[in-house]
Amino acid sequence: MLNLFLPRICIHCGTHCDDHDVKKRPLAKYLCTVCLRQFEIFEPPIQDDLLPKSSLFRELPFRIKIGSAFFFQNGGIIQSLIHHFKYLEMPKLATTLGSICCEQNADLYDDYDYIIPVPLHRTRYSDRGYNQSENLANGISTTTKIPAAKRGLLKRVRQTPSQTGLTLEEREENVRGAFELSKKGVREFQGKKILIVDDVMTTGATLASVVKTLAIAEPKQIDIFTMAAVID
Image: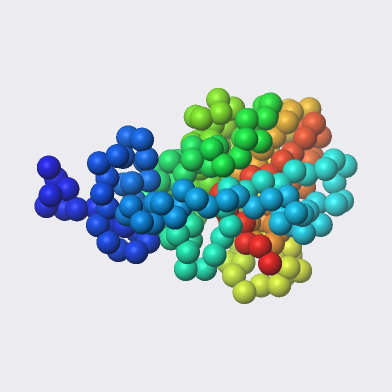
């Protein structure tokens, strides 16, 4: 009844949403029928698309597997979804998309011991009120039954400026030393299979910094999954 007076508006194109099928298609709360149909036919990037990102991880003693659910395009539906859950106070949208990502990537059902979202610095977390990567990870965790690591085991100890507009070398330097693994985290992750989760991978510099920090614990394996990836 409420929607008769306050109809839902598509967060991408601005038209009204027809959300009568919202139980079967949760994104009908956020996207109109046309945009939802487009979203549902998107194909995930293949490994050949993501391989250039792996050059940042060659120094590690194990091979990193990188996965992503969607291509990131400026002005596209995926960008609209990410923008809204990241900046416009829609954490439940991120959780919903985490579950949907599992439909795009069967590898998410691998035998991981922990899912670890890329942490926010405490100041940014306080300003935003939530960590969008944590919400994505919770959606994946609920669907796959792989536990999400407790907050605080991996910390972002330095608030880094935006990576936008920086070269790869500048991005690497920007996030150098930005993360720290607690002593409990070292004990918790030793010998474990870990999946790192983030919203968008551009060059992979932030994720590479996270991987190098977690490598201190000598885990058995670290893989990476992002909702979207920027492909050159």
